[in-house]
Image (cartoon, rainbow, N blue to C red):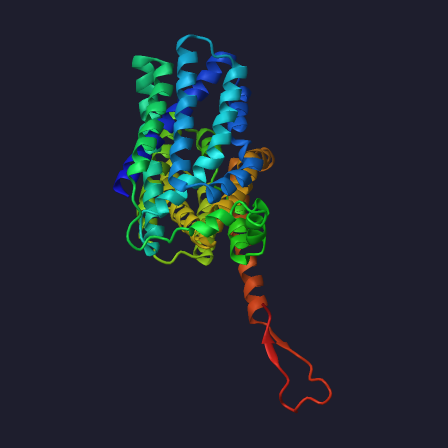
Length: 415
């Protein structure tokens, strides 16, 4: 698990280095901010439909081999991009194609690497392993974004892509040496692996499990409303800081740094979770919504900075708890497909959330969007909780049929 964490840190740092440089590269090629957003959408779009197939592939194929091959393919794409940039042969069309290929491979790589990490620890430590993964992600993001500027300044844009390619190869080289920990989740037996290729072991089975599992649907609802009306702090807080609070780019940079620090603290706390639940995810998301309301009313940058840390902590712990539920609730043979379903749903939120929030800010301003969004999050989760409690607590009296023994009418509870 230590080796896997080191490998993921290196990979995350390389990925964030490339993402930072790629945005600058698109601006350099096209001079258009819209084209930059389009390149990000093209890379994310394959997950909308292909995540279902990617999750099915993870369930059917050997997990270590799948993770190693997908990492190697991502590394190859990064190396090809580096060569094209170095030779000044990269145009917008080629960049879009490479971004789409990266998105397709990621639909397999994401669930494969997530579930492989869970195999390295005993079942009871999976929430902690997910928390460590979140911590590694946040740390890699900070380091990668910082290294991007240094790398481009001293070695050029191509070097950032080349470094990211090396980071993928490092992960691929580590994977063969990983061994499951004693007490880790049991592997699917060989006969079941053979059955996975049969018609019954299809994408439809994973989708059917997801839509008939109330706790997963509840998790999707909580995460969805939070993703659309909150969490997009790089958008809402940027407008708030540079607008009503009269700050500049430097002030928003400070806010972004504090958000990252809060995310790391939240990941550390999330790693200590032992029994994550959907109820905990909902409570944390509602608390985050209320903090967002207060942040929208901040009279000064100092007050906002004081609120940003708990906002980031709550978000990070909630994400860790939700991921733990998602990756441990389904049976082992279905986890890849369930993660595939989740990847498709998450892509909808990722593509639709920012435009919806942008429209809300156009109508209500930055403060209004934060306040309204926070109230929608907390109110929706609160209403869902009340409805759920009402359904589970309301007694159902079944009328005694003629001939029944008096006093033996059944009492039931609504499911």
